[in-house]
Structure formats: structure tokens, C-alpha cells
Image (cartoon, rainbow, N blue to C red; front, side, top):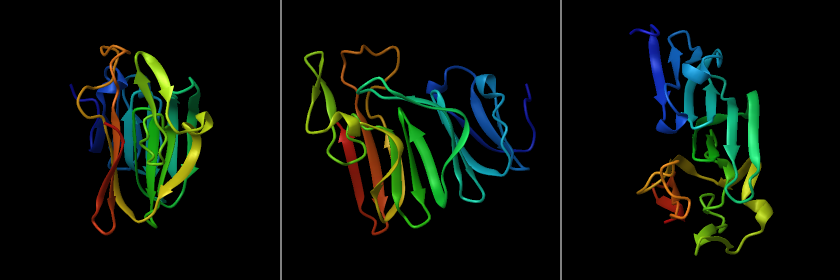
Length: 196
């Protein structure tokens, strides 16, 4: 069944629970399906969706976020109930389980959301040990960022990945969750941080 015409871009993620996707039409309008059907936004060149969160990058370089991400360390939420502009001068942006990240046109990398597994590359780590949460070398307030923080310069591209098992409702909470952030620098060096 045809649901849209003149579509130039589509994004869907298994964590977005069912038939929920976003797409951009030739007139650069962002549309959604399922529970995202009311997300219309104009002048959009790129969009991503993951679980309950989404982002839209406009042609003018402004980054807009909508939805909810959750802190694994202390139960806090970051909730954009409607579209909110978060950054400007953005060249690329994406999101992953519980976090957002953006590369500005000057190569600076910003991240916000959950840092419990050290994906920001700043040494924070919250890891399950013997079915309990053990804190290792961080202050609790630095594990969840509600505003973008600059974490690196000279970044060409960044990717978020969950190696091995996917973390979802089918995985026991007692099993270790792993998450990694990959950074490609302008000098073509590849860095990775996060829990193995």
C-alpha cells in the first residue's frame, strides 16, 4: 500500500516500536507514521528516530529534538514534549539508546543524554556487577546530561553502536548492557569509547 509519494529519505528503527517511521518528501517536509504521524516540520534535510526520541536537521543547520530519553543511572528523563531547537551550525546529528550527538560545522562533537556506560569518553562508567550498580570513578550528576556538552574537536564522523546483544525488553536486566561510541577524526584516526 502506498502511504506517501515523492519521498527522498526514510528512517526507521526497531526500537521505535511498531510501524513508526519518519520520512522526508521532495518539498523537504518531515512526516511520520504511526505514533509519529503529527511530527510535520518544514525545511528538513535529515532526520533520525530511535525508541521514543527523534531529531531533525534543518537546511539552515539548526538541530531540533523531540521525544524522551532516559537516564540508566538515576531514573531521570530528558523530555522534549514538542520540537525544540537544541543547537545551531550542525553538519550531522544522530541518536542512540538514551543519548543524542551532533557534529558542528567546525568539527566539534557535542553529546547529551545518558553517559552511564562511558560513551562520552570522559571516564564515567556505571556497570552492573553482581546484580547491583557499582559506580566507578564518576560523580553521579555527570552521568546524565540534559544539555549538549562538547566532548571533542576535529571530528569528521561519529557513530553509536550496541555490539553483540541488543538491549530491549527481551534481554534480562541482569545481563550486561554494552554500548560504544565511535569517532573518526579529521586526521583519519578512529577512536572508540564506552563499555565493552
